[in-house]
Length: 71
Image (cartoon, rainbow, N blue to C red):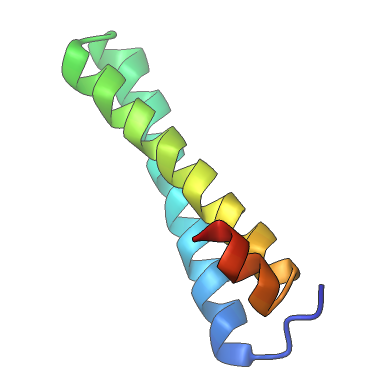
């Protein structure tokens, strides 16, 4: 894995930073408001975004062939 594009690194740091912020917010909201269906749905969507982003980064590690396999 060799990410040399500064814009890509900046994008990934921002993306994962927002995911961390959303995850912490989801945990805090669930702690104080309880496990309502809306909050459970929110946290499930955040976990799904984690999976999608990690899968995309894994595909980037394999280069163009990884992106083809991801499709």
